Length: 140
Image 1 (tube, rainbow, N blue to C red):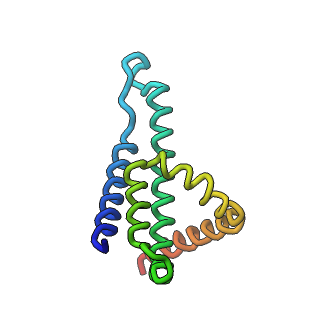
Image 2: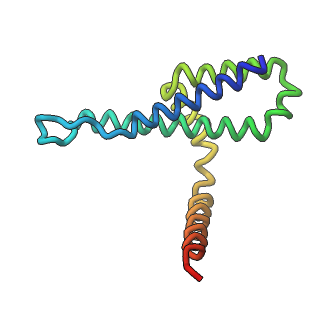
Image 3: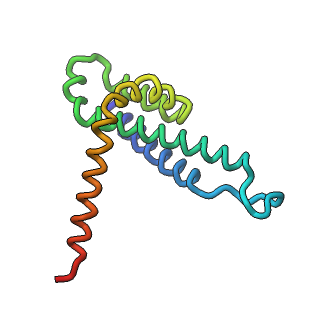
């Protein structure tokens, strides 16, 4: 069973990357709208982007959990590797339809109270990074 989880994880990442690649392509132009994409195509693309983002958020939270708590939880929970395999297989098979309820009912309520603190912190971190990058680009 130790080999199944890494293979499923790798397959999940490849599926996420491929789905993101396909979703980020612009919708095909419509002959009726003068070369502009149809409203239906734009709506479908928006829905696909939302699903793709939800899958990535759930996957990143799973990866962070696995990296920090995997060894501790694995000691105390019997059949932990099998449970992880079933969870990753669930994510692979259901994609956005399975990840969206996890996001809406578990992750979002956990993250929402901290959004007021996290947003300015990330913005400040980005500004500092931009400043340091600009400072490094200045010739001496």
